[in-house]
Length: 113
Length: 109
Image (cartoon, rainbow over all chains, first blue to last red; front, side):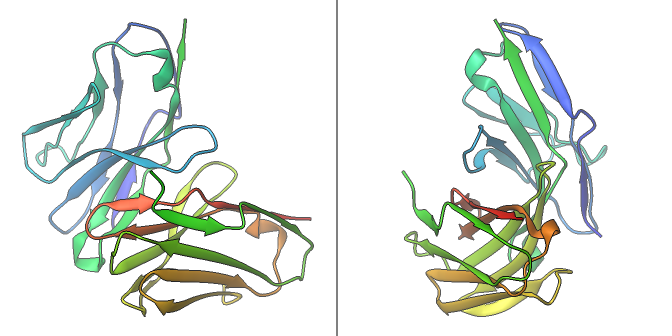
């Protein structure tokens, strides 16, 4: 079945440094990948989405490129801010199944001053 | 701007009781979902409805039953709650990308 793997459970960085959060996936269908961000005690919110191979997508300073050859959709930012501290989920949509999302285990990003 | 509303925000109950959670979306979407977020923050799909019809029913204990009166409303009933049901239950709606409600935090004592 479909699955998403996020290898880092916890990432701690100093403000201003770059970050990359890993996401790989498995699916037998054409993939549609998402990154959701969840701040403390809030709902998950869409950060990025893509179904186009090798095309970079950007939003709010974050960017990611879907690479179907390596089944990856890593999230990056060149300079993290304190407000980026949150839980980040990579998710795979099964479009053939009414867009049900299958989430990775999440990466907690903590940005320190 | 909130467009997916959930009630209650919190609920504390004892093992064996029945609970019901409500969800309403004002986005005009046809598809709604229930997800469970456990204490480790893992997010997992439970059910999906499309225009009042149940279309996705993941492996969920039978004490969980979703209900939909129209495409804007999706409720979740849990008969005889158990300690492992303690979690945040997130409702979402979608035309394509999903919009989540704030969640209902259930604590089972």
